Image (cartoon, rainbow, N blue to C red):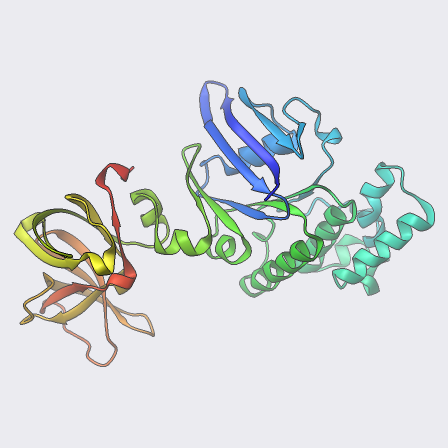
Length: 356
């Protein structure tokens, strides 16, 4: 695949504070990559560097082979969609959408045709003459999207574009954004703190922390096979259990956790298991079993929460507090004894040195 956007070893400071540290990211032509992370992780700074609103301390940014690193923002020809829409209140919907074309010297019938076609594409043709004040939040976001797409940019960038919308409209709009992006084949970078939004809309997701990319992968791989403990926690592996192998018998191993807890695991289920490892499990990955069972981690059940699909228990174990899900058919009492049995499909093995 041809690389459209190439960010290489970018470092950025705000005063004496280092915000990004040797960050590298390649985005293929036509690909949508999301930058995902908590506030302060560096995702918006990365967007602002690519857009030209900030200059890096070191490193390079290239788009379609052209060096953008020191190029002024207005010369980068990048489409931008902001959280606050950034519409001109005194201009109609059509004039807002056509503003970028006007700035590029496209006028008259050529401009009108492109604006009309784009308004039809985003379902706003009947509202062409309205002012932004007469639009809903979702309609304003469609105007902002149309304005960014109509200039046919080589790169489209989104900065938390759906944060101001209600939950249902966010879902509807992310579907529309994805459909339009695919139809246009526009290379895109999407900044968000919402994991569900990033996973649903992206070809690949970069999970960021402290100015670094912790893992860049497809949503499926991130969800099922996180590369380290930070990513595992981020994507919902509540339970990270330090273990060491004490015996091997072919594919089967016996591993010991804190409190002298022993588990038998199969490498046929988990893949290669090193001598020291972290067993990372979601709550669904620790099945609550009867205390009389001979397998699993011994536990005392604490707070029980009804989830609709399962009961979730906060558990005290010799290996520390763990969270596990039990079936709806048999709710268990607080204080009851149980065994927590790993479910391989909901667990993964991490190397201990990968913990961050």
